[in-house]
Length: 229
Image (cartoon, rainbow, N blue to C red; front, side, top):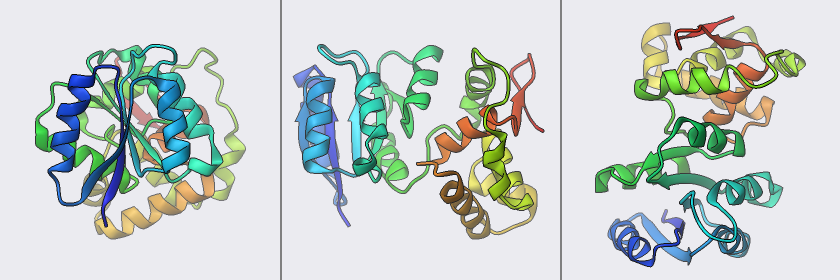
């Protein structure tokens, strides 16, 4: 199956370079380009791509606002947003996650990494699970402005095993790492995580992380490490 992608970046030269790269893959096709966030939202609603590769700083409507509009639209539930930006700041990562983005990477990545990133989030996973992002996720999602756990009743629908899986996802572990820790197969872990996503109406693993912290299922210590509750 060919993954359909929209590129949103205000720099035409970069869009052209990314298009050439993505179109070189047999399983990826760029179906549209946008030069600002508003155009990105309109094109996404028209073309219903699998993935939108979104820059943050764009005129008229920025990429974070466009991401929020796309992810809040129930008709676009199957579309994932990959933030690709020069500005890899903690604040932007947190805002992108809360807006519903499924991945956040810098423009300095290697060509193969971008191709893999598009495939990864199109498959329903997130790019925020590697160890390099754990302290970031813990710091910014575990300590919102209102630190009181919100909507803990959401967790009532989960089995004890599913709660355990969601808590482990919130620590930044991948399915393979969870499988190794729990002595389970990656397929079994994936099944538990997918059921939890369905019950919690989460678009992807990134939203599972948000829910885990907001409900108090996971929390961060002051030193940035993440604990299960």
